[in-house]
Length: 443
Image (cartoon, rainbow, N blue to C red):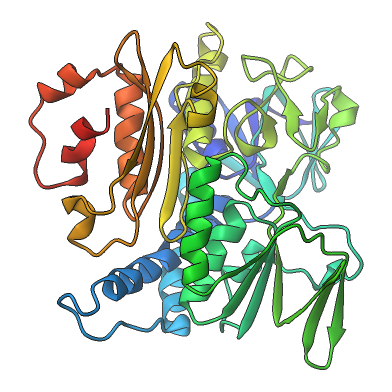
């Protein structure tokens, strides 16, 4: 006879853990299942370890910007020591997460979950059953299906390198390619980013992407655009990448061509749940085609960026939905960013969309490089495009390119969500001189 629970959560990452904890606090009997590392991608092999590595990059960059302006000699990155620093954090995530779940008296199982039939979920040789199921299995790096694809490594491999190779190539110009290229370049590698067309980071403002690429090129990164890699061959001198009228020999090739949902091994066809390369299809209550199965986080096909904070937001919503059913989910504006050098971030309505409706919106395009906030630490460039609704005077969108864009974009998220006008903002007294004190000049 199958073990019975109120809810079985499949996936022990940020979304799944938030679900399990929230439901347990509401008195539900909960089982959480994880096939890989407890804690999921973000703390083990994603945003958290990446940001630890980037901390050294940011410190090195800050020192470089002030050469001859108060500092002499820029630090070098000690990759093995930096990796040891990263592992000092990540090595404890799996056990710490599992112990945290057990400390809440939440049942756990480790293994691949597979739906055998409606209300029958197998995990290894055990079969469990529940009133409801929540799929929160996340995504994994995509591997391009080209000749020699077995030579590809992924972001997972990069974030756990013992040594930085002399030559590193990223195939795919998305978030991962730009961010990891920034790290590899700062660590001393000869870095190439290959992209199949001339528009990497296509979700971001084209002008500011060009500015970012120019800054990264000036730092020594090579962008090979309109290059569709066809094969990887192992040679005596390294790994050779070939495309039409293109050849490159490198030591490490990372497939940074996006991510795919972890939905293909769950037996979803057995329970009437549909999915494609974008994720598991859900309605505005995060419910799949099977009314007792839900999907949240990166594995779901929802109209928002696949980010850890979004997964947590969806988990909090679904805890409420499974205890006190109510209204459809309503997402706030979601900031997104690329942790390159400099950083690129955006939230709300994009400038390109706003310019198509000149009667409704005003777009402020600003070069802030010489503003005090940026001058003081020798910033090479600081750009902004801010969208203001003409009727209300409220900020409704912003795209930023600067060393502090990751901080500034959160301020803009608050301005948008709280419908703050310039007079509203000027009724506040913000600490000066800080990036926040610049906000009033961006309306």
